[in-house]
Length: 466
Image 1 (tube, rainbow, N blue to C red):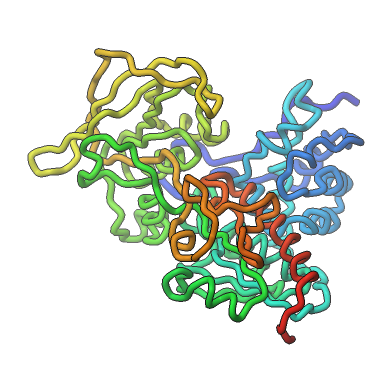
Image 2: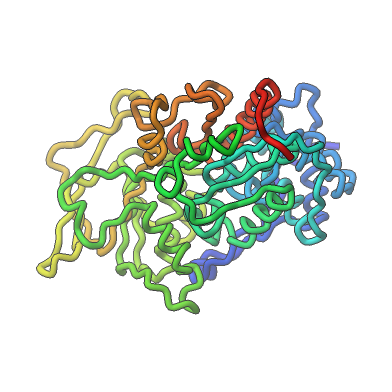
């Protein structure tokens, strides 16, 4: 029987409706659609999709179980390698990873691996999450700094290995970027909380409101623990460095999305949130965070939401799905456009941005064509709010406070391929080590570090007791 060339469509909210709410956009597969999509898998012997997965999920195995209707077994296969499948199935850029390696791409669309992962995670959550068998307790204690994707993954894997794990989290809720940086319509808070609850049930303790580097130092933690994993992410926003960037009405994407999430703006208009924006909003950048800002602005009542990006659509780093959703929702794209100055009105509030048109030249260090200004092409756009979404740098607090730690030129903690820093017993992974990247790459770093920490603990005699 011929294989269907296209993925089975994911039902979702209509654009005109969803821009009025913060409900999740896609609804997910039902059981019959999941089975039919799973049947598209060719079960390749060389398993190219697995090589594209940072957390090494046995993709053909769990898809085979779905195709046969064995959902419980499929969940077991999936969660043997990942502790956060409901999150991965929603925000992982699988089109560039597992699906990007799928053999079916030669004749059509790849298998909907991400959609199937989401289906399984949602199926298990509704039925009841099963806790796997935990290895015999080792008596070794590991501290994890940061309850983001890297820290949660590392902690969960170490707990399953039998180690005693404690997470130190600076904020009052777990999840890091998952909770504070990604909007509700893309990753609901209840999903994050359910995944973190699973990590807790593995035996991981989470201490909140602890700012490592301020409340307590890494050195003090090492007095009580056998190893430390640092997964504090990339919390230092980058700016455009143009005149007027300090005006009232100009925000970093990090500040804007954190405010929206912490102040429950996603419950607007039901919840009287202090987060306010103007009628015309411009977001600078074209990654996933930029799309999040532009789409969130519409949901908060903006009449116009712009994406202003200095390259063309072909160079946009955002996921194709996110760009597609943004266009459907009415986001206006000003491409090959770069800001040069923000201007205020007579009250000191942001009133417009002056931009210049760009053309693409030779490729730069990133491999993308370098944008070059076109002289004399300046023009102005009226705006009331500007959101700067051009990336973030590693959180500087721990790198600056831990003596002797080797730091890279971009403020990142330097590690080997397994997350080991130059200080024995201290490991790091995710954005704090690589700079801003994806959730799934942070999870992959956490998984690698967990294995390395386990090996380190096995080779190290400690004074820990059960």
